[in-house]
Length: 413
Ligand SMILES: [Zn+2]
Image (cartoon, rainbow, N blue to C red; front, side, top):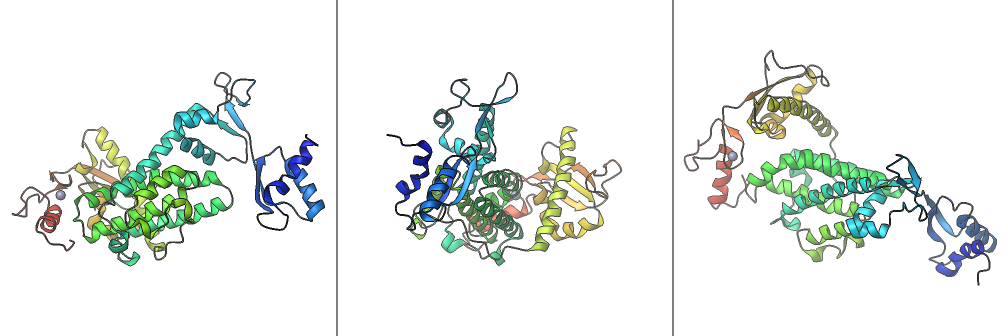
């Protein structure tokens, strides 16, 4: 027998949470659609204030309604069974997986009404793949690494590895704050951007050369793996609430002693701040480098289209630099070519044909094809291929690595 629907929903806290003023009463959070201000929230408040002189909830959070896109009119409409335009969450979960549906929920600003369509779900599937592939790369390159014995302290990391951990720490603080204010779309966009752009398009792309060519126990490889491990472990915990299954899968595949950590990622808390990786001067330098890299990429793309080069590793880049970029280029020195993924990169006269950059005033980038030969091991172009008589086919850097690997020495290069 229903006495009154609003009265009955208004006393649900008494039925569900047990005796008032004893945990778990009051509820931490009431979550419902934004049509409940005059409904459930209101009736609960009336009953509870009358009976117990306080609200039965700590926080109220409301969400919007799901709209659908009418492809004929191009307008959004309320989903309704009678119109036959509703997308069933069960169907979506069956077709694309529950993880995709959850990602969609996290991606929209759910406080407002939100649009769901097949096209949006397809985009989410793409974003999910990007995030998943990032974790696949992180885990795939951690084989043979035991975080308990092989990790380097922050002060011993290579600069680029310390820098990416600094970026991660900035992301971590931002995502935790977003979770605390229920801004889940900021969590989603932060993760997507970090995995897709910061990691995949730059850091991991540059790292491949070092991971694939350095000896296993070398500082170069250990430094990279220390960063990869902290990224995998930390990102997994940050992602756990919105990609529950994927995060758990990652957690089970982390290297090291499984007994030394929680059995499930869902038994852990968000990561604590990473100490010792902040450095404002370094970050400024890297931000300038990324700006330069974008401009060089543009020039390389033009050279590729003009058939001057087939891939960027063939390019010799000559830079006319604005005053503020000179200390940056000087700082990176011989590493600059690896950060730009070219055969050579140095300051100099780029020649009359090089156009001025539209975004970085005072910068001109000249591109020529390298005369060097391709090292069959690392694919970089080197003028001095075969200078080591023991390893006549490879570049000096690879020859040094092979001395360590094949020479049986345990010491890193
Ligand atoms: Zn090489």
